[in-house]
Length: 519
Image 1 (cartoon, rainbow, N blue to C red):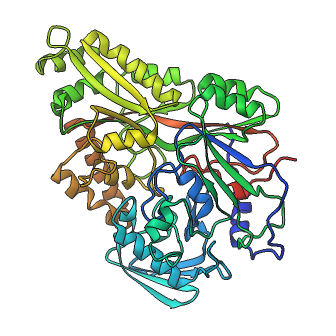
Image 2 (image 1 turned 30 degrees about the horizontal axis):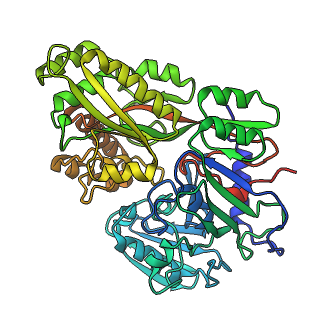
Image 3 (image 1 turned 90 degrees about the vertical axis):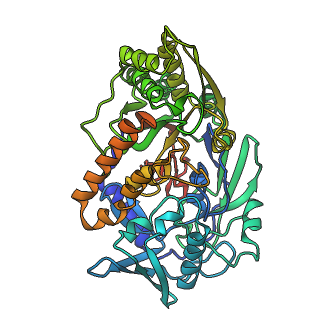
């Protein structure tokens, strides 16, 4: 397993803090960086509303004030070169990098930061909740912006979020929504949109932004292509044949092949990404909590981890290890007899009425398909038939928002390196549904969760206790979901590519600008 080392982190921070080099012209004539994914890339173009897989592209198009560093577990400079907070944590001042321009040509200054964040806050969608603690934003001068807060918030961490923290040009067009929906961008990052083909295999192409503040003096990729290939065998062939540079996901057997193939490099590391089977608590047979608990107990947790062959690790609770709110003492176990008893009490089971459950999952994801196969096998002796349907992410999410299934299988990762993302977005009451695809409405849980953001700053011990109570409420009392594994990232890429490393706070993102292209 590749391990991030302090020297590599130092290089990243040095690049973030240093002045732009004199040479700014983008390189020409190099082969593109081709990223192969098994899911649709773009769900939402508007950086204020974006909340899905497009993070893999948008993190190369847009930038945030800070960037989370997995070595120090602290925020590092990005668009902001420094920041400070008041003693009570309610005032934060950021000093901005000078000379930065948007892809539209306009300057990125304090007024632009204020305008973009205020627009995101006003949207009230996606991850805009991350700014809920902000009461006002004040421009001190072109390179200084101050945030006043309603309550203490780690704003340097918030400003590093993978969603809703992007700084963008709000003056790009009179109707920004229409502007973005056409596949345009208004970012400041190293790459800008060259071509978007919704629904096509070669969905998105980015090109280098010549005036990027970081400069282009050393070799960089000048073109980035995102291709959607649900067939993992084909994705592997593309990498092996030189049609792809990077494959985000392979099956365990293909990853083993990649690890032993000359000219191919692999990367394996734990993540903050959890698999979640969300149960429909609002309609259908899973309205009955006894049936939901039966499904939880039917899952072969140990067998699944064994069959994932390194692609997943056991999960405990809701929040994965390494983040505040993780509950390591929990260890779910399969209990077929207990599942049968619960189903019998609900009128189902081997001696009762047959039960059919509809489930959706990601097309082309071999790990999710494995879970579906094993769950169907475990439920069959219980007189339960699982009707599972593999779908593209956009289609699955659209169906889920309409309540069109009993079990919704998906991955979840934090908006920023904080455990609140799971509870605040997936299990807090929401209207419209958003990502609460268990359709859970629990006022007592909501009230409990609403105390966490401030406690995270003022009393971490109390915040941990609150997370533990919320975990018990979601998984035991309400039985709204099962979280059977935490993803171990297993990547494969062209052997000549240098400088790649995973940052778990930005799942599946390759920061292409930081790479050294192969010869």
